[in-house]
Every structure is written in C-alpha cells, then in structure tokens.
Image (cartoon, rainbow, N blue to C red):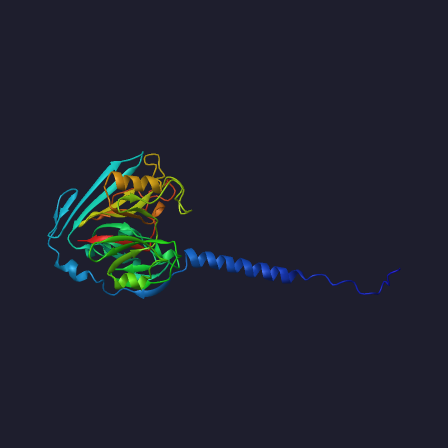
Length: 306
C-alpha cells in the first residue's frame, strides 16, 4: 500500500521533556548531598550549660606536665604503642559523673553546624576534650546532652547507644528497647548514638566483621569508657600514616578490655574526626587522608572543664 506523501508522520517524543526530568533529578540529587553534608540548620541554642555552676566552684588547677589534680578530679594523659599505632589514653577520676560534659559546635543543636574540636573546647574552658558522635550529620539517633533531650527519633531498633547516667553508671542500649524519654526519666546525663558498643560488662561486643560500612579495617579512632566507679577513660588513636597505622573496631575493643580493664566502652566518631585536646593544645595527629595533619570540623565534643 502506497503512503500518501501528504499524510502526517508520527509525532516524535519531545526531547525537552526528558531534559527537564533529568534536570529535576540532578537538582534533587545535589540538594540531598548538600542537605546531608553542607547546609546548616539550627534547631536550638544552648544559652547556659547545666554544668557552668559546677565549673565555677571547682578549685584552682595544680598542673604538672601530664597530670592535673583538683579537689574532685584527677586527670592523667599518656601515650602507648599498640599494633603499630599510637594510642592516647586519658584517665579521668571524678567523684561526680556529671563532670563528663558535652558541647555542641557554636552552642547550637542543629544539622551540619560544626567547628573543630579545639575551638569548641576552648569556648567551654575545657581541660581535656575529644570529638563526639557526629550527631549533626545524621537525622536520627538519640541525642541527650547534659541531661537535656534534644532528639528522640530512633535510628533503628538495632542502633546501639551509650548512656552515661548522672549516678555514674554506664550502659549500652538498643534504641528498639527503650525510648529516649525513658532514658532521661531514668537519669541519663549523656546519650551518644554513633557506635557500636565495644565492651559491656567486661565482654567484647564486636568481632572482625564489625565495621558496618562506617570505616574499613585500620583507622583513627575515638572511644569513651568506664573502668570502675569514678574512673573513666578517653581513648584516641592516630592512623592512616606511616608512623601510625590505626586500629579496627575489634583491635580497639581488645585494647580497652585487655590493657585498660574497662567494664564498658563505646566507639565514637573516628577517622579524620578523631581529635584529643588537652591543656590548650591538640596532642594527637588528626588526619583525614594521611597526607596532612589538621583537625576536621565536628558537630560536638565530650570534655572535662577546667
């Protein structure tokens, strides 16, 4: 059958429609990335930390090169080598567990609000500080700081949190087993939601496969632990350099259980965030790539005030 030369040809699909759709998808993808890692939102401003009155009452420091004694606290900072890695251990003896304070960057609870550990520490007259759990780069996971509940959205039933109670007890809990409000009602002073738990009741909780995509194999690490009543430890390891390889989660847990005899220990944000500040200076070698030594901005810290 001959086609009439004047008959209409089938309409072609309009390329502009696909171009518009592709543009929308691209813009949305960029927004998601920016919203996750760049765009800042402040949800609450901390105008007065509950521990400021305590800090004002503390006695004058009697400092030596690596030890500080006060009326209610005793702090010692040491270094050791473990599995080709430099490990910094801060022993803290405090009669009151609420001496373990936390602070947000810019004193603002929010999303992607960040600064380097040393700046946050200095703004709170910290004697010693470590980076926290990077709460502000996530949209879920319990956040309790200095007894105040800021976020009660769960990151999932299996999310492991560290609870530091005002009475000095430590507990590793799963968010599927308890609400954030229940934790506060039961005396929670701090709740961190990075993880995983490393040691509980003197038993190692992780194995060689527990990296959960947050990191692979050996890396800089930051951890918080309890040895006994009134005795707490901050642990920071260097990594990603020729001088210091870094540790896996299992190696970190093993070090804290075997070498420090902790009864409870918990993994905080690591990698380039791992920073130890003491007596006015950063004393470890924080690095994201291994090619340069510098602090990376974080959303929060754990510290002991002067």
